[in-house]
Image 1 (tube, rainbow, N blue to C red):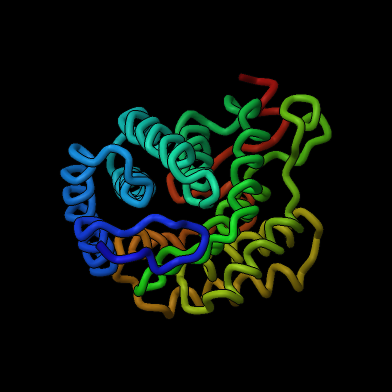
Image 2 (cartoon, rainbow, N blue to C red):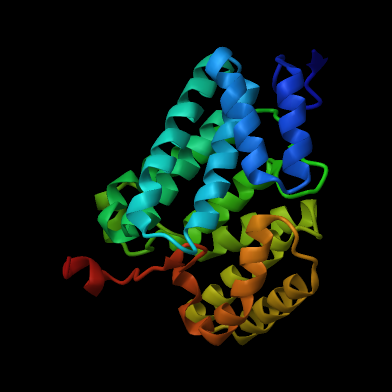
Length: 275
């Protein structure tokens, strides 16, 4: 067994986990899941395998979102949450379990409709902020996943998609904040200026900021980041999706606040009251 090449975890990487990393770096999502499922069937208490399987299943859900109803993906996200909570129990000082449990809850919210899941917003925020308390440092060779990059990505999307109405603090104890969203995406892009998803999400956040705050410079910068993201190669499955969606984002830039890879969200109070 090899000792894990990251800080924040004392666990060693089993050969099967090393193989799953190789497959993930090659963009073989189904192969990654297959190897990790077989390994975890026998080795149920390996947090390094558990959080990687959670991540791979989440990414599979992102791919399926382009072709199947939201309801068919909910069991995937439920499993992601279960795997992530077990990873937390086994390795509470690492950030991955908290990150991917929050991601699972976030995707359950976007699958069911964010306005129907507002009461979970503070729990999602808490998990992602807790993940950043760890000293974990990690990066896939292909740059598609990293830590704390993934946590910054999650928080950036959270503060853009979470409604910013005053009533949100009563409903859930937190609220959206587009300036926080831009802040976290700037951290993500500074950490890896070649990660397509980060550039795309920074562009979306800046467009959202521009329309919320009537800020033409933010809109112009947002378009710039989307254009730059579109020039990057898209090989990994989720990058292919993001690349295809960039023209659609630009065509609906006034709706940028409600963009999600798995659909567009209505976030206004009138839509909430009409539920």
